[in-house]
Amino acid sequence: MAKLFSYMQNATRLYSSVSGKVKSQKYVLTKYFQGEPKKSDFKIVEEDIPDLQEGEILTEAEYLSVDPYMRAYMIGYKLPTDMIGGQVAKIIASRHDKFPVGKYVAGQFGWRTHTISKPGAPQKSGFLPLTLLPDLGPHPVSLGLGVLGMPGNTAYFGLKEICKPKAGETIVITGAAGAVGSHVGQIGKNMGCRVIGFAGTDEKCNYLIKELGFDHAFNYKTTNIRSALKEGAPNKVDCYFDNVGGEISSTIMSYMNHYGRVAVCGSISSYNDATLPKVTILQPAIVFKELKVEGFLVNRWFNKWEEGINANLNWLQDGKLKYQEKVYHGFDNMVDALVGMLRGENTGKAVVKVK
Ligand SMILES: NC(=O)C1=CN([C@@H]2O[C@H](COP(=O)(O)OP(=O)(O)OC[C@H]3O[C@@H](n4cnc5c(N)ncnc54)[C@H](OP(=O)(O)O)[C@@H]3O)[C@@H](O)[C@H]2O)C=CC1
Ligand SMILES: CCCCCCCCC/C=C/C=O
Image (cartoon, rainbow, N blue to C red):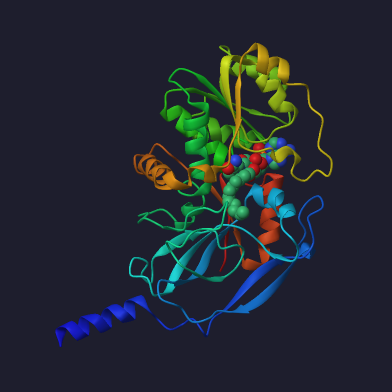
């Protein structure tokens, strides 16, 4: 009798029959972006959620992510197509014993409210692992989209495995006050490096210096880049973490030390442009300083995903990693949030709280 009771308790915990009655809303891209993304590039569609099969979970999105890659990637999809993106979602029904109702997952489910997924099933090529969030104590679950998610792992692996900084070296970061950049700088300080950031407002620069411990931060919109480098990096630059591309990157790369390393993470300065900008030639600096310049995509470390999450979680718990979020509100405001982030409204990670 006790065994039967325990079985029934377990079954109730694992599987609530809400699917079948649930409808999901999702964004479908119907026009390719031209310049800034627009609401009229999308339609919002309602979809029935089928019953759960063995091994599946049904989740309800709590936070949706807006990331720069969304602006850059969609040109590769045939229209109409479901909008891509990460989310942190609560498990509301489960037929998977390791993913019980009430826990949170981070998954690449797209801009949608409800999703059925199968933890452990092979992921689509280029996608990121579906992960169960650890207990975050006082921190919001949205960190699964920021310091404890894709941007956190981009900072961790990009800096450690591409830049390979040594204590005492100088690291320069562009896009320094954003999700990835603000995280890279803090890891750099944790590794004993001198850290210089470039960001788009004086307020962001003050935050980087006063709150995050950057040695210098400069407003790239109002500062002469070469003068800033002379002031901030008197021993020149050993590692450059490039989030923005364009002319500022050419200037920084021509100010590097012999055998400097460049992690080319992104080029947000041109994502909204219809024609690619021309920049000062880089090959002389690369050749004569024997620089190592390497682009990367964070999903390269799919099989070591947990290593990055755990390292960042430890720094967070030790007070060695701080974060800020720009939280937008409402499923209907996804496009405003994406545009806001691309315009630089955010310090730290931009996320959307669905309800
Ligand atoms: N390779 C990979 O695997 C990954 C790459 N990335 C890349 O990393 C970069 C940062 O991403 P993420 O941290 O998520 O985003 P952020 O949180 O940094 O947000 C984007 C920021 O870009 C800055 N920006 C916008 N336009 C320009 C411009 N013309 N010149 C310089 N800066 C600009 C804005 O800050 P400001 O006020 O300073 O201008 C804005 O806040 C992006 O290039 C992205 O594509 C991100 C994740 C994974
Ligand atoms: C195809 C959708 C999944 C995208 C996974 C996220 C990888 C981020 C790589 C970012 C590149 C530039 O911003």
